[in-house]
Length: 251
Image (cartoon, rainbow, N blue to C red; front, side):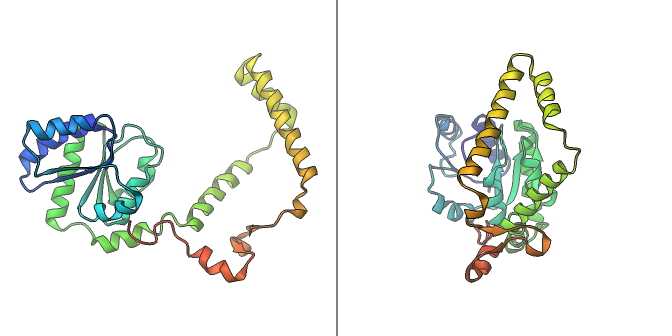
């Protein structure tokens, strides 16, 4: 894990290390708050149970992840958190704070969500530890095979397309009404500035399309409908593009 939420981690480590003698922490990442973890390790004499790896090269992340059984994320803010996807893809049970977009990243059976507090995260970790000891979790290989289907290029593209379809399916206002809404929502001064910039952007787009018409731009993909979706123009590379998965192998 990284050093985000270090203050939470500094409270979790001594409490759970005292309760579970066979529990060890492997911590990857670097930052100004690393000294807090060093002080905790020194104060509670946990040098043999808390490993601080420092900054990791991306190519080394997988080799670190597979050494553990549970991945703890203590982030206080997060938009997506690729780290928990990588951890789950390596077969780890994920325990994470319930912040930002994290609840939408993995299904409930692959992640234990907690409030951003020491007490809540300790409970989540204890639940994960019990699941590990009871053998209630799927094998790491099975978890990987589940997770790798979530974020293929095709999967992400289809979900993005659905969002655009949902938005475009709503009633489209004429340009004058859209500008009126922009002005009324942003105020008499800022609204007119934003409206002017929107018109300027549109005129720039028209100019660029006149300078470089669509007809002379090479088509990278044909995604005009379900039957032709994501058909690469070069047939020799179609199979490679369609099979290129974000998490094709455990990281």
